[in-house]
Length: 256
Image 1 (cartoon, helix red, strand yellow):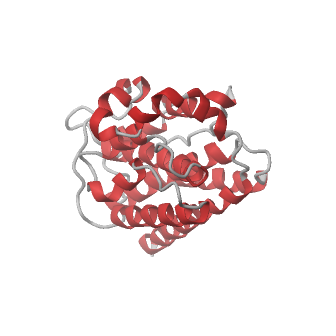
Image 2: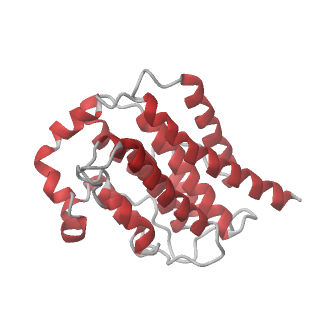
């Protein structure tokens, strides 16, 4: 009975995370233009992560050790199956990422954001780890760069606790979800532009997940695509990865 309730909770949260993409329509998108101007010179490099992933990857992601776990030091999983841990860590990251970008717009309903953060706290409690805090950029023009540091420095030690209580893969999935969730609310407004957080997504997914599941989020969108088309495509890719993580197969164990 407890297992069935837990599975129902995860499935309902997966649905809510995917539906949260509707917030896109409340975000004006103008604030994103600041980031394009600030990083314009890096556009080509960041659009080709397969050729320059090490160069394009942020120092914060490259140097982070929060997912590093000594051999044999992984926890027991707290009574959860590996699939439950994966999906829960992933959904928690997705929520933090979507909240992080949506919170930057005053037009987004604060009650909706509060509900999302309640879900984050519940997911964290489910895995027995500290809940991550909300992301609030100090400088809007530097929000994307600040978000990378926010995820990788792990101020509330959510990622570190996931690694030590559960596994390094749970830590990486949480971070992957955060970058992924943020990106899905930005990409609809930037058709044809470079893929946001492509190096970080690649860094946390490569060697752990099948490339076909995560590579679409490291590729630019078509210049002719409208926001609705991009949102639907990204939602489908997100759902496919969520379903995969909920399966019983083993993931490759990533390095810290």
